[in-house]
Image (cartoon, rainbow, N blue to C red; front, side, top):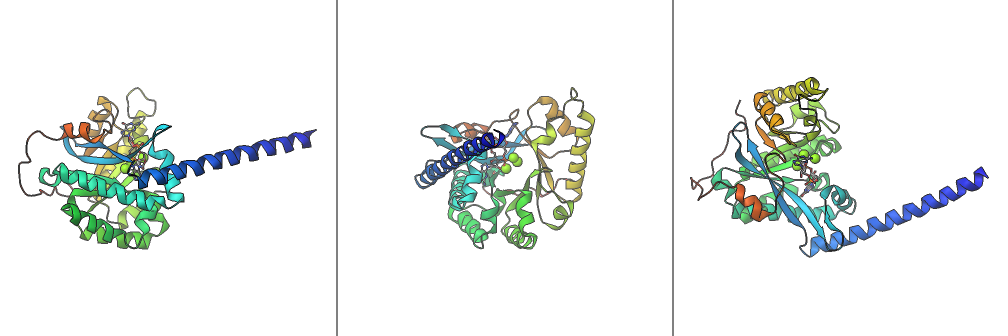
Length: 295
Ligand code: C2E
Ligand code: MG
Ligand code: MG
Ligand code: MG
């Protein structure tokens, strides 16, 4: 009896697995088609200086409007693209499109930056830096108007290669941000030894940043420590996932440099994101380089 039941369950399980695999295979095929036929889009989320809410730049976030399934969020297809290595092609398109938009919006002339997420596989390619340099040249952008966002995991895969690549990017003037800080296999020594210019605190840490939360004091302390650590290492700090005025005010008080979140601006299609740009032509014809640390 029990044996038979076990067997049935095993069969049902195997059935589910292949359905799931089939689903992934189809999604993967659709994604390849979407990348090759220019069907992906970028949305742009404003990032703001604290205090005062002056725009500091944008983060480009990829979107996939699937013809049958509607908008598929990146959390559902980036990993898939990494598995099939399609991420290399996808990533090149994202970088190129974000740089094209940065040029069209005259971001360097306005002293604003464009941030682009980079996946581990992309970052590990031996021609990655050459590709970034070529892209900047092609769009006539100075390195300092580009921010590349990396996550902790990729640095772990090969710290020596990471260090070398980060130095080459630094030589181009490109800024590098540690994204989602505090959620991965963070190692503090890694922060110390690698030249990151920006630290992005994961939005998980902001969830309890509210006087109504029981975890309020702890949450505040965590963020304070991260801000101090970053500043001691000459890095700027960006808080992700700011959803309330209270969080915004608290972050200002803690000396956080920049903020990003729904309360300030949602990720928006280009035409709407452009409304965040200061009105009129840029003041100076020359790119103004902001100091890497204000403190
Ligand atoms: P991320 O780089 O940490 O991007 C921030 C994510 O937080 C975005 O999700 C954004 O929409 C969301 N977000 C921003 N403000 C708030 C807020 O106030 N509350 C909440 N709940 N969420 C907020 P999104 O666009 O779904 O992207 C998810 C992740 O997918 C990104 O996380 C990034 O890791 C990855 N991703 C997005 N675009 C690309 C890309 O072009 N290439 C690569 N490799 N990864 C990408
Ligand atoms: Mg990011
Ligand atoms: Mg992030
Ligand atoms: Mg994230």
